[in-house]
Image (cartoon, rainbow, N blue to C red; front, side):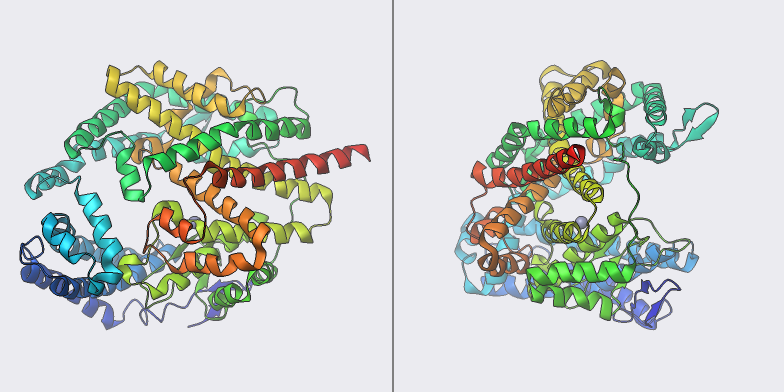
Length: 598
Ligand SMILES: [Zn+2]
């Protein structure tokens, strides 16, 4: 069923998956998943980590494993997609819950496989790994081995798994529960955290100041509990890292991300060296806002101007043109999402907020979910999600084990797509005020995605190290370190007030996914460096870029990028990304000067 709502916004057609929620094929597939998983375990458990393993046998098991993953993906993706467009429909939520339960039973029967890959005797593994039969599985096998090197025995892993919800995960949940229940007061009125944070974008400075006070006041009320949680989480990570033999607190993240310590160090160093860029931008912002001295609640203040509205058709045209000027091949793939109704853009009651692109399997196409309201931000979101979409379409020549990219690479095509559309939008806008607004929002987005994440990463580095060396710390100590690592980024362009030092207490990543944040910076800067290269090279860059996307997750990030002829261990590569941001800051300054000399 292909449809549009009354505002001509597309509603997706999921019939490539199932004919509807009552399609009997859903039951049949869910049944198959459990049955196949049980048979898979019965047939192969104990036969992988074995002295008599051959390349041929391993390949045949991998082929079966692959098809098991493929049949597992379809019903759960369908349920997720359906649920997100109407979360109030109880049939949708029931199907979602059912698919999740089936998946969790299925994965308990599949778990042994990756564990055994890690335990194949070294001699046997070395003997078979270079066999041509394992060509398209080599990367997967090697990566699983790197990961499982740090795993404990099956019995120990089971204890950790089964007690997970009474340890760290329980404390993370507690953090979420405390934070999401908290009511922040302004006068007699109560606000949730996200309602309060929106107020930091208010043009009225007094409103922002009051919101900031309220945030600090609320956070301080729970500071003791949250700090207790934080200390426990830091300690748990230390204990488990020791058991698993990870050298530093951040090492486990690098292993999953398939990047080396030295590469992460290089990215951090280059970013810190370019912190003055953040300072330069905020000096300009201070002038734009006409404020004597900027402080923490001015960071997200809007640069006042009238809002531009763009219809969905226009947005579609802008994005396809921008993609097409880069490469008609890329635009052709992006166009499929519109003509085949693989996109759901119409906002409606009960629909989830935000946007995502969901890949299913290499044999099926991805879907794009968003809520289009006509803002500039929505045009960028469309460009972003279509980037993911074409990335997945290009990677569909990989098998399902190599289909997805690791975190630092996952945002490559989406961010690249955004850059293309940003330039296109800029060329269409006549008014210098609008141009300045667009560039500023682009720069602020980059600062948030690159430099702010690095500042947070540096905070995590020092706190984990301190906890490891000197035991539990007071909330004031962590507050001091937070303030220091954040202030560094602004130099003297913006003075963070005393209140701001408490604000680490609400950053979910710090509690829920230690050291996750650098992947954002890594990915964003990587794309800027690639984009700078595209500007230099033009035509010859394009086939290399296609190769990068088509490779999906079949090789590590450093190999992927070095296949394009770049060396990501070289600071110059990263510096070229920072230079591109610097050019934008210069551009903004120039427009500002021109406006003021008129
Ligand atoms: Zn994304």
